[in-house]
Amino acid sequence: MAAGAPLLLADCDYGPRELIVPGVSGTLVPVGDPLAMAAAIDRLIADPDQRRAHAEAARLRVRQFSIETIARRYAELIAAVALTQPEPAGTLRFASA
Image 1: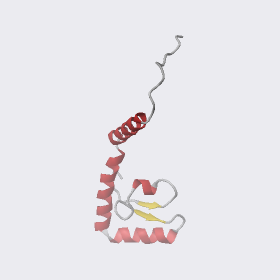
Image 2: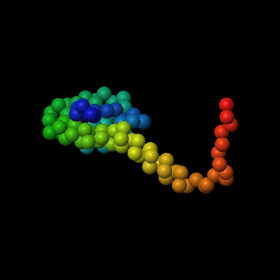
Image 3: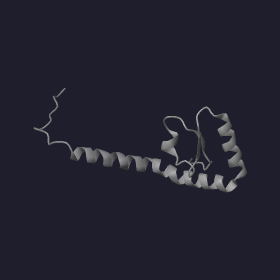
Image 4: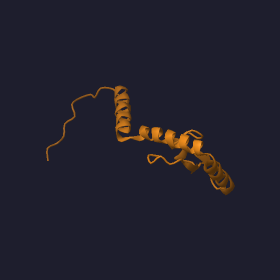
């Protein structure tokens, strides 16, 4: 995605649908369907505009997985969960070693 290649992925249970938007930033074909894979390859070879559009959309999508973006999302999640927790009953103290 980051390299700007058009993506053609098998639609397995976990991963591809989280990475791309089918038909926008890549192409999905059913798992174990070599005819669908071959047809999708043929379509991509025959349509340079689609390849370019998918590659550009994939480059934009990959930004959503940058370290900065993921770290910010984790921080937001942790802050949201922390707001739902009751205040601790007392001060937490660690025994000295």
